[in-house]
Amino acid sequence: MTPEFILVTPQARPQVALIQLNRPKELNALNLQLMQEVAAALKALDQNPEVRVIVLAGSERAFAAGADIKQMAGRTAIDMLLIDQFSIWDQIRRTTKPLIAAVSGFALGGGCELAMTCDLIVASETAQFGQPEIRLGTMPGAGGTQRLTRAIGKARAMEMVLTGQSISAREAAQHGLVNRVVPVGQFLEEAFRLAHSIAQMSPVAARLAKESINRAFETHLDEGLHFERKNFYMTFASEDQKEGMAAFVEKRKPDFKGK
Ligand code: CO8
Image (cartoon, rainbow, N blue to C red; front, side, top):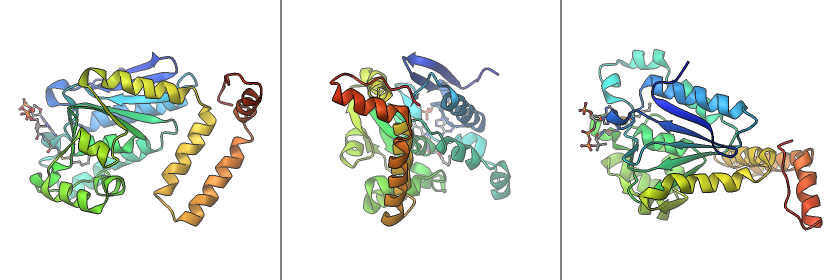
């Protein structure tokens, strides 16, 4: 079925796919269908052997202005429980390939949380990141209190979540929330550039490295190191490791096949 609220380009660049949120009138507000479409597209691209890295973008004006307030407004707690929208977010989190958010304009509420669910964030100079839910009488629900705190620290996360104030792209970069900030006309191209440089690497090693970094947020050091070591050993079962080291010795560029 053709998605209604996103555009999917499996080969936006060689080996790099693009998912573009496309609900412009509503500033890409994340209704349930849009989120389901994103999760389904990510699953398909994750299984597509031609794709090594995925870029998730909005428009220049808005990455996403949050969950769809109009859709949520009248719901009860039990409606929210039964709709179980966060199972979709859990599915997104299971994407094994590197996922880059290309953020310009508003990344608010669920929009900020969606960007933080990605592995890297490229921001335009106009990007603003915020968790304004408190102004609506609620609070972040898709990881905002957890991922933001891990990314920028308790004091700043408290201020953003308790006041609802946004931070600029520059502040987000200073505090380690985003990887880089570029002029607005270049944010997508910069995301593709970053995606391309990752796509040159071994997809097997990238997958295992991503998994290991994410484990750092979920466990204590001893177990994290143990997990990392197992994944490190696992790379030695790949042809890519043999190719990478042979290419170094032979002074040539490696040709990684993802096996
Ligand atoms: N939901 C629904 N519609 C929205 C949303 C939204 N989050 N944001 C903007 N829109 C709509 C507006 O209602 C407006 O529609 P219409 O033209 O029909 O009135 C249109 O988009 C354009 O918006 P504005 O006219 O307001 O544009 P401005 O440039 O004046 O303002 C802002 C832009 C500042 C982004 C403003 O629209 C705004 O404050 N939006 C709401 C931001 C917000 O509070 N986000 C948090 C939402 S709650 C949340 O995300 C909880 C997450 C929980 C888990 C995630 C589950 C998916």
